[in-house]
Image (cartoon, rainbow, N blue to C red; front, side):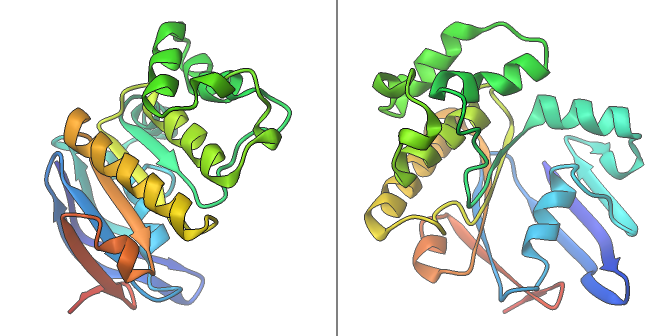
Length: 214
């Protein structure tokens, strides 16, 4: 489903990805580990069409997305990818329902019923009229997960999704991601530096200096 061939990326003189070759199969739950600056987040950004490689191929669903123009990349992100970030990226002045609705509004969709269904599955439907600023960290991350799921993406990219949470809330979020992967067959790529978090996935891939490592 996802294939990177000889992908390289640098910022200035800093080589972040170095001729990287890697494959991910549809429906896998993969953890990507590595020290700070190893290229983990850049890899997610390239797979999620948020950034382009300097060289190499990025093939997703048999399409070479690195050849897409900006409009095509935007459409690809809207249709195929959900993002979950360490710091939630919610709008504190909006309600839970409104935060989750944002991807639908951006895509011109009106499936409001799907929002309540997802919030219910994540046990936060009772918070739908609460503002994001009124929620605990674990609840905010559930809202971020709901926002990522609302368009039914093929791929979820999670960048340190438990990094801002206490251990108990982090375990709950990982349990939710595992259940999503199992029931929805969504491909999940999770970046972390924590081996305990990484071990929740089916497979662990390690990156160092922009290359795969043992």
